[in-house]
Image (cartoon, rainbow, N blue to C red; front, side, top):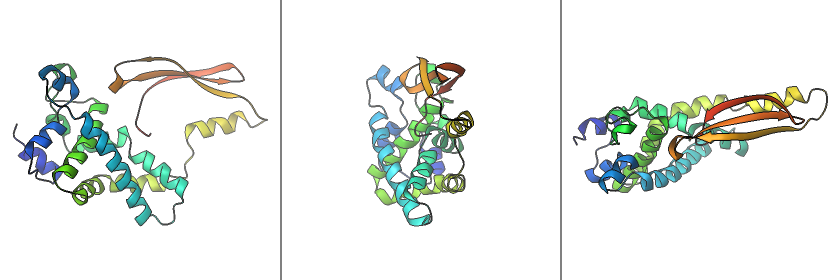
Length: 210
């Protein structure tokens, strides 16, 4: 594989090209060819991402208290946010997957988001934490800024709870009734109950942190 284009998008040139190759190799392809996938790198990258984001929030958002920083971090260190980074950097063109996952034109959100974490770890192992931090902040500082401004916005569960409890306390339950799809692309059907009475159901995809 020619790595110049992806390295240009990453704004980082790897000394160990094999490390970059592993970061871009999805398990669907690795299992077929008995090679290493990016799963272990993803695991490490997830930890680095959380640490660097926490550090950045601590140093640059002095007015946020601990709970607010946790909410901002959760809004940024999640599948949707990382997927946006992957799309912007055109990860889908470079990821190595089985044809069933979209060979050469990957669009799966979970796969793309996981690859961002794997690349973060690869940059760290190829050089140092400072370069990994540079990549993270360059690509997520705008998302952090937006999330910090929305940190006081109430989530859907809170809004629903407040409306249902207008005239007194009620028992509100969220129940997963079914799930489908592979581990990396799970979809869940859930019901919301009020005093054991079904109000609604909905389907959504599992996401990291948000």
